[in-house]
Length: 263
Image 1: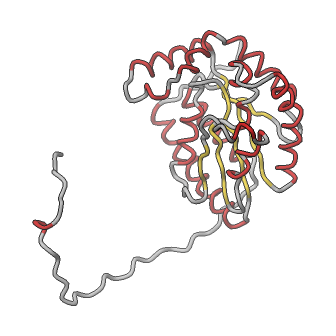
Image 2: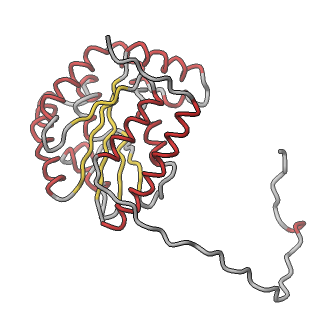
Image 3: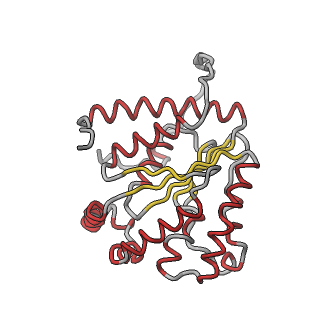
């Protein structure tokens, strides 16, 4: 029998998330001070919980230091480029963290299963991807790759919830719906991708994500454990006194466009 997990209450989840987000702020200061370059890839099936985890990571962070890259399908011009070329401009400079909400691994997943690339392009990706990632690591980039693993039953429930919620329906695309009917093809594609790209220099880390809240906490905890950072003391900020009244007269609101106060 597996180890029985403790109940994760809403209060416990929020307490742990707040603690981890404080650590993320400390990490951000360290990254900026030391000029680190961090790339984190978030991959997995649709509705596996990648977006929710990314949101919790970025919430407390400065968007000038930590940014999210979620590229649309390649343009006609980009389709003629070296495959990795469209991702290179989004790589971090010193003191930056970049989170890829899906990445160059589109070729080994959706493009392979849906027939958006040729067999030759697919096999070339499997051959060249480890070399590309090795170059990134040798250049000084800290590369971290997460695969969010969700069961077929849980994915179906999340798809249904999105269909029932008008505020989340935009998250569903025709390709997402086709993924349900090609579950095993995606599984085989993922297994083959891991065979070629789960390398010692750039390993995959699997996040069990049927429980979204646990997945978020576990992923952030693991991310923090991979980077050797220290807390940098922050100088206390003192609010300066307000400028003395020197005769300023505020213009009347009647000449301004004030929005209605409906609440």
